[in-house]
Amino acid sequence: MLPGRRLAQVDVRRRDLRIPFPDGFAQALTGRRVEGIRRRAKYILADLDDGQTVIIHLGMAGRMQIVEPRVPLGRHDHVVFTTDEGKQIRFNDPRRFGLMTLTPADKLDEHKLFRHLGPDPLDSAFTPAVLSAALKGRKTSIKAAILDQRIVVGVGNIYACESLHRAGISPKRKAGTVAGALAARLVPAIKKVLKDAIAAGGSSLRDHVQVSGELGYFQHAWRVYGREGESCKHCKTTEVTRIVQGGRSTFYCRVCQR
DNA sequence: AACAAGACCTGCATGC
DNA sequence: TGCATGCAGGTCTTGT
Image (cartoon, rainbow, N blue to C red):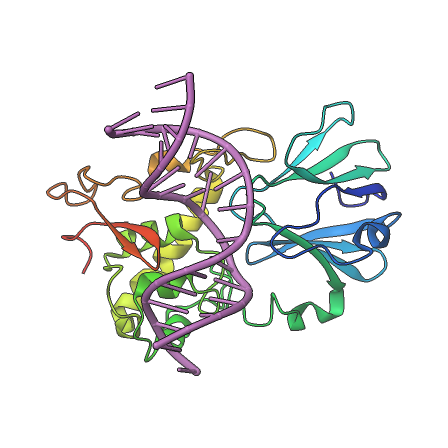
């Protein structure tokens, strides 16, 4: 939809998101052609024809929707791109945890948002050896560690819980002890959970939808997340426990995960 | 340097 | 019905 299109008009209706929009953001984009769309970690990257890249993050509740311009604007439609084809792409983000900014494409890796990022979990470079090296000596929990973007990017709260359950590793285990056979279980578990979730269109908790507007259905495949008090789908002998780690809910099975 | 906790903001479900 | 409370998919910042 967007690649190859020129941005005929860019309206920033609200610029105080997680990071305020840079001055001249709309002007810098107006008239530019989008050459391609990429992803790095949870950032969407739109490469423009002048060597600049638009960095977009959806935060927790943000979405991009393709609509006809006649559709009334929503309360949280913060940015509206109108293409040379006359369609609109709207960035809607009720919680304003998302962001948009601009950087030269060749400076992307040096950008403050990018320079600390670890490997992408679905990349072949994310191996058990790489993970255990990154975890070595870490005293924090393995759950907190795999949410840490310096260790591995893109694994959020749901998928961290699901991956640890699949690998049979307790979320409370010290990160530094996840090496050898444990790392060899965790890496493929993360990859499997993410691939399955992508194939299912993601997890619709409250309001997540795919670009098509359809709900994802991976939430039906959750083995522990959101299942406090229900029986573990693996051992079937114990109830799923909910604890709080770093202010976030963790769900796990005390029998299967050690 | 590593870690835990707090912060950002809005909407929704729940319980009184 | 109204109000208070707690919780939510993320990640950056602050303080120890």
